[in-house]
Image (cartoon, rainbow, N blue to C red; front, side):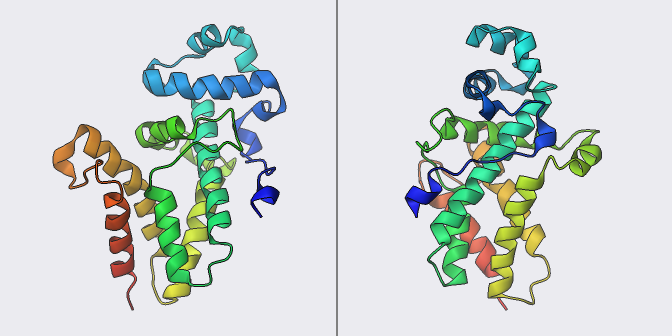
Amino acid sequence: MKNLLANIKITVEEKVYLKDPESSEKGRMIIEHGIKLMEELGLEGFTFKKLAERIGITEATIYRYFESKHHLLVYLISWYWSWLEYRLVFATSNIASPQERLRVAIQILSGRIENDMDFAHIDEVTLQKIVIAESAKAYLTKEVDENNKEGFFLSYKRLNKRIASIILEINPEYKYPDSLVSTVSESAHQQVFFAKHLPSLTNIDLAQEDQLVDFLTELVLNTIKK
């Protein structure tokens, strides 16, 4: 099955970009170096001019692929959620127990990751750092309703629904599966951010590799008990 999944393309909603960056070498370079530069500078310091200088192309070339740096951010975040869904489907395909599938899902949401060589131009470890620091900026905008109508956040919502459906397998009477999953998804990033920058807001020690996973697993399983 791994061989079959190796050729799968991670898709992002078409409205997010003007030209699919996966369709050309320059597009893939924009993504590869865009991840590195955005993590290095943060969204506020990141510009297409700086990215063009880093790659050695014109700024106009980047604008052929993305309308703005916000659209590039949405693309990167959307790719990340779609990649997590890909990993979840692969990791749970032969697991019958919904409880065990839920544990795997929480591990994928909140555990440490390694670079996936099936997507050589994407540095997933660095991309996760962007998600932790910048992902809320993808939707905390005045244009969020319009962006939502255009499908900007479908990958996030699709992953959320997939995990929520596992919760309902375990407890069909639980009333808040979508709320719980989105809370866990956001907490997985916030707790890492707090541990790095605002440690008095969390008990998570990043040196203890599975602590965050254990905390969120305990939170979810205790919450959905019948």
